[in-house]
Image 1 (tube, rainbow, N blue to C red):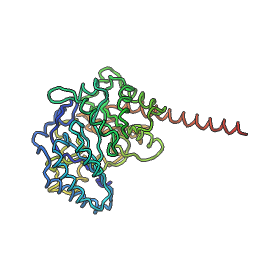
Image 2: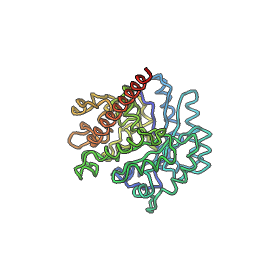
Image 3: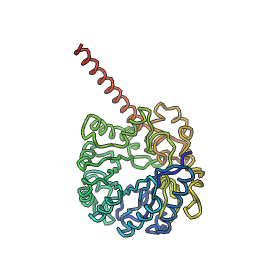
Image 4: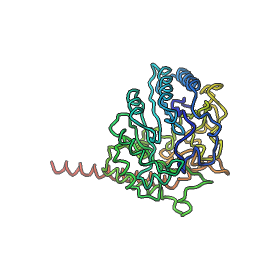
Length: 383
């Protein structure tokens, strides 16, 4: 069992956007209503004490802190500075990274200057061209967010602290248009995410009897990227598949069979399973432990956390016998759920993932063979 070294810390429980697909606010779980609107400084201090305690006990010195919400920048820049001061003071002498995931609508020069001075990496949630993004990502009054996000991206584009764009796939849009639009902002990484779904709440493509629609959508982008269009931009989902195809370990929790050393902490200090569990059913994220009363070793013993640390043995029999199990890993944990079998299912995107991964494998093998053939022909010509 690996220790927990990745911490998603929810410093704000509210958001200035009302994205239609949001697992936090619009998929049935309303626990946010009873949470403190912002995290107290005492709670942040206690979190950092727990992090240090855990790292000393398990002898690791590489910690990832991701500040989340809701929208983390709603706390305001002065309180944000206080959080960062607490984190840096407590982790002095450790190797660590600090990042935020933001909808970018509140970013301004003051924030960027502070982020740059303190090496705080900024990930942006943005779904593509305005006609795509604004269908789902809008303010509470219905106004689309794309204009404000693009202004922030122009400010971030030249900055060393711009870490990338996170995009939820709309499978009914043109994938190349979305990918090429996002690539114009020159993000170091683009992370394409499958919309949250499970066997009791399947993706819309299932109603069309199309079980590879998402796989096809992503393959279009993969082929464009792999064949040279802005291939300097890292597309994390593809990279993680390629790592595993070549026998390397990956770090993306939605793929592979590696143990997951990640925990979410809410504004009241409660430990949670990954917060996207809220998309499964209300309260699915709760484990009944908090930073004030429980250390992180106790978190590791909780059943939901243990299940995500058991690797291949924790998957359903269909997944265990699948030829791509070490790459797919059964898919993202929340996407496996059904009321009948709990999480003992393949991902609801099983066929999409199978097509995507096997087609990527065939493409890479073919390119390798062609490259070797070209080298052989050139060698014979020289002789």
